[in-house]
Length: 223
Image (tube, rainbow, N blue to C red; front, side, top):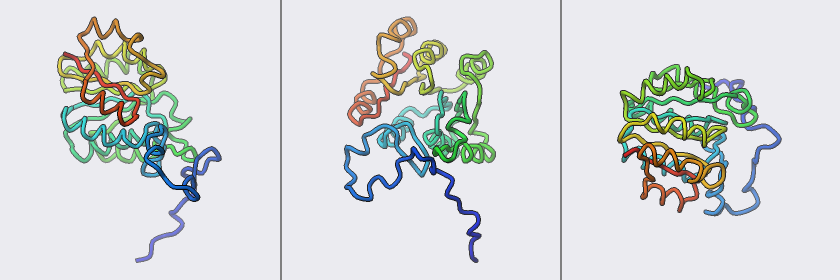
């Protein structure tokens, strides 16, 4: 059987700002893979390449039942979490994106929302919400699921400090929360009061792993 060639498209990643053909004339090095903002499975990802194996081992050790991501951006990390949820069927995954038209559904800018929604249509474990995470609707939804599932929250939206300080207090013992862009958009002094008030501590082994691989991720757990 011959496939229908008209189904192929050059839309994805066709925006003028996309770094295509970057290594057609130079050698790819380990240092290159450590850089933040990579392309993964053809989609845009605001992480470096080591974030994927880092999460793979982190999720394996902690065996979460509910994962929440604040800030989908282009969405390739979201599709990683979604595929993890769909493949294992042992965790529910929610992603929240307030401005999906800017990147999430923008295919020339490597947006992955179109594929994420197809995954969500075939699996009850995968969901996306296009609402403000500080609105009561979002808080109530997440809090209701925290109460019944072992939870991991990943703060990677537009206000990581506020995300952490608003949602970390909702966690119960054994739950975890992590932030991206550690040392750039958020640091200890931004969240120290929340850490002290709600018995949150750095996960030392995974924090060191995240640091050594340049992920800019900092993980915490509720004691």
